Length: 396
Image (cartoon, rainbow, N blue to C red):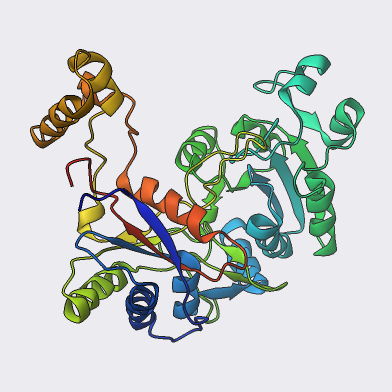
């Protein structure tokens, strides 16, 4: 019988994972048991994805705010530190800011505006236009911001992040001065020791600051790259990708986990004879059209994946074929013509008009985004996602 479905994404429940658990065995057994209970079959090239959160938890990759403070003080001197371009997040950044503030006497906090790097807005573009403010050149202190724009709580969380971050820094015993600017060189008017907290633009920011004469420039990806007093760490991303665990602890992005995905793949082959692709995923790379928030607060969507997930899609656009190459056909004749075109397509369709409009993104970013939306970030209890049929096309 001809298949009537294409890609299917399933959240898979599993036991609560703790430090030291055999996460590879838990993942494999949970997926196999789900298939048996729900009555579906596993197939070659299915994708099993595991959220980075439970991987890091199994690794015990945690650190305290005191460990952050010690590393910040050692690397930036412990006096006046410029903290620039952080995202506006109680979960992602506020807990890190506590540690940063405890490692300095004064924080000059410089925020992007009208929004942070991932789209959380301090003010709207319309408000800037009405006030005659140019975000590319104008620098605002906190008083001027309040004079022009007043209170602007976040539309989803209701938090006024300027007040929230300022109060948090003061509660940790540091002085604070808050400015709004988008040119990283502005911070050098206040201090020559800078912690840049941007995620995807961090390399450029560091380059600009160093060229402008900054004495010390350290990124969040350079804090906790090694253990501090026995803490967790991330050798590649430091504090980037971390989340709040408790009021005094963060969970870091998982450390090297390519061995994990290969182990999971091997166990699937041993237990059910199927070649399963495996990945670890974090935030998906998508944007909310209402809140304007770009979801990707992690440094990458996927920190580890099996080799079969490398590359980008190589697909034909069916509506292009139907409207152009086979515009004179319909019904079964049209279906057969399109199927034959798919069978005959080149291995690399880059630049082909017949592939225009297909999503030009890496497979891991596309599949990771699908998995993030499937698993959610709350109480669904499905940190494992099984994606089936992703590599199929109309001829399968």
